[in-house]
Image (cartoon, rainbow over all chains, first blue to last red; front, top):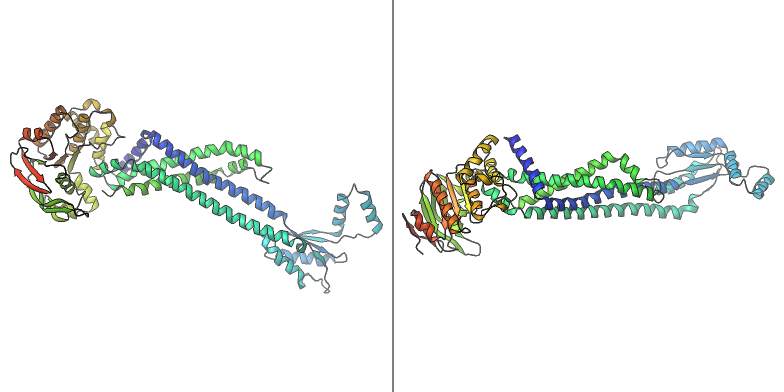
Amino acid sequence: MFWVNTKRIIRSGFFSFWRNGFVSLSSVLVMTVTLFVIGSTIFSGAILKSTLDQIKDKVDINVYFITSANEDDILALKKNLEQLPEVQPPVTYVSRDDALAAFKKRHENDEFTLQALDELGDNPLGATLNVKAKDPSQYESIANYLQGKNALSADGTNIIDKINYYQNKDAIDRLTQIIGSVNKLGFALNILLIVISVLITFNTIRLVIYMSRDEISVMRLVGASMGYIRGPFFVAGALYGFISALVTLILFYPITLWLGSATENFFVGINLFHYYTSNFGQIFLVIVGSGVVIGAFSSWLAVRKYLKV
Amino acid sequence: MIYFDKVSKVYPDSSVALDNVSFTIEPKEFVSIVGHSGAGKTTLLKMFLAEERPSEGKVYFESTDIHTLRKNEINDFRRKIGTVFQDFRLLPNKNVYENIAFAMEAAGRTDDEIEADVPHVLDLVDLGKKIWNFPGELSGGEKQRVAIARAIVNQPDVIIADEPTGNLDPLNTYDIVQILKKINDLGTTVILTTHNKGVIDSLGRRVLTMENGKVVRDDKQGKYVI
């Protein structure tokens, strides 16, 4: 009997979906908007994350050593730094010769500078270490670490000329703050949008079922059980969600294709279309899952109200 | 078979719908309940269908007190009763066949039984040709015949007809009453409420007359006396 009932409930759900064509269409449209918002949240999250990662990646600190610093001491310090939990390895070492070569290359069209360099005879540039933190807020503690005794050479002299963190401190701090608040704001905004659109969907489905309240009371009077009355609405609700999800996924294809090429330069380092196609499995699951769950759950709740005959 | 024992219904706004009503209905009886609008006829029927609870008194079907039943027991109980209403109450998105099949599905009947019984019961009410039509495509009399077919398809012990002819012309009214009579002759108890004097007088069966929530007359072969 269970299977017979299940079969009848599913069939009846499909029929009521089909026969209430206009109502179903409008529910599907409203749900599509909801799922579109959820999908856009995924995309905006990806854009935000990739943009912030790009910005974070541009922040670093350089440690300039005095020209007389011993290379072994610098490499020892590099090793120590890489073991710090705040530091994102590898720490890049630029030796004095490398620095000079890079300097010459940068000024290869500038005769005067190169001449001035030749005049000096000795290499005036110190070695540098380029350090990246795992999180921008951690630069301060790294700089403090370098300021402390740890940066002394084996014989106890300070080999560090300067750390450019202190020149860039304000900019780094501000960036850290901005990244933090953009993340929070984006999250809150997305949650708000999702909640609003879910409520709208819920209300739409409630209206659909409100129109069926007489029907529900008739079903009660012929002695149908709760589950048998609820079942078809539940199925139809899930069906609204499923079809809306497919519509949404199809809509995202041309939209991301267009946005991807149009905004690739604007959103550094992410092409929405590539993101969509390469993460299609996950996005499919999220959209279809939320569609079916929202549709079925709203119906389930809405019918409950009219079952108290 | 059906026993109303000193039943009263007082609504929260202290209006009295039923006032100390007692009567018995025997198996295979055809009982008409008459009275002005607001006399308490519909409340009485709702009480019997367990849609409303009495403020005082008890309603028995066979030996069970209806209002002590639990929810799923109420569903089982309602399957023993067929209901017909003035406004037909068909499922608008199901065709004639499915409307009747729904009542059978709710009662847990098999697909084979449904396929066999639905056309049969539609022939009984002379609607065999409209089996695939939707309610919106039927006339009032046809809708009421579908409702009756739905009510009798599970072979209920009792048929309740709440002003079934209220929306029908005289010819259809006559047809419906004849069908109800036929059902009663086949052994089903019928409880009918109506305003129609002609219907009552032509039936010549037991009549309960209600006024202000009380049963004021109970005639074995009654006439419409108000």
